[in-house]
Length: 223
Length: 233
Image (tube, rainbow over all chains, first blue to last red; front, side, top):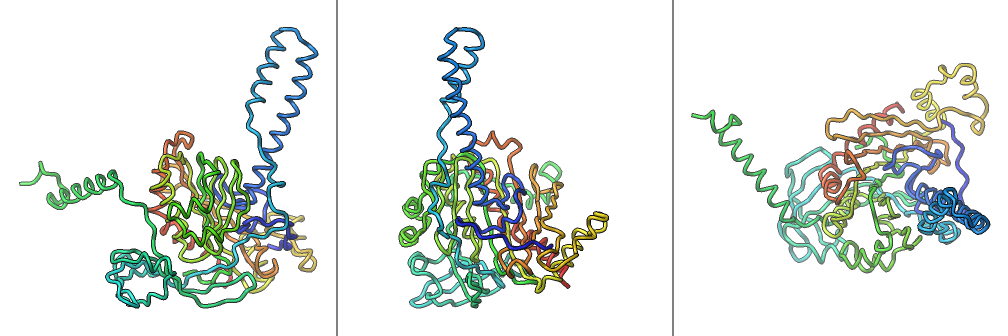
């Protein structure tokens, strides 16, 4: 695997990806993909749009010259009408501020991660149950008292008993290579329960209750 | 935990469907309570246009959307913030957006310590012998002239947890760390889709999958990455 470093491009637009190959992955992979592919897609669309515009010009000229209402000219008019419906595609390269580097500035890789459930909030701290996700845990394994200053100001303001959060400890690296041990707590911002969610949960609970009641045999088989 | 600590570690969530790029602006995120007003005010705009919007809220996430594709990247743990953001956006705020495909893409750049070690791993994954006489030249010359594996993608389709979809793993030489000499880039594309993605009428199926499987997806992706990391020893 010996690939020389790729020359820097004048514009690096949110390019988090390796972008080592020209193409690859699937429709939903972010592959070389991510932003590079988005730009590529736009360039291709722009080319198609330019081609349609040229076709439109040619057809208009031809239509004016022929004038006759032959099946062939009708066909050309149909094609012309469809080219007129094509939505304009912007020239992406003219829209991007040249030379601007907006790559994310740091990366933080966790060595330990917990999911937490807030039991109570005190003056300078909060108490929470923790599930050790790194160990593959699904049940509460620890109780912790955590200083409020570990949270961002906006998260601290929203913290209430019952809040769910993620806590990660690991190393943060800046793009210059500086490595710092870091702890980061963020409140989970989950979708609200909908009526449909509640109905489905209720149905599932009833099904489970029925299963426990009958031992999985079905009512008709119990004595 | 991965046996080699990545130098860059992140996730990209990619949705395919029908989007209106002009609404996805930082201030819209703030107005909906998805990010703080300070974060929105500090967002760096790449492009805002009816056809495409690109911006980043450093260091939290970067975001891009065009008419049929939406991508959010996060490289700061906890990575689940990216999933929560998407789930709130399309679970609560825009549930009627047709979304037919979802990719949970884990990506890392890690160092194997030396150019020679990376070369060895490349040869393990793609031995030069089957390439015959031409392959003999891969290892000739100094570092600037050496050839070999540039990019490899493997795919697995027989998955029990989905009707349609796949897991695709890509290995490449990293050009972002170790001056392009000692790093490996890996991306795992965990792909879900409706049997007929074009028939999507709302976002609910894909968002439910994202919400339920994000953590386990990262875990199984990390297992694949860790397997390749194990080739270092």
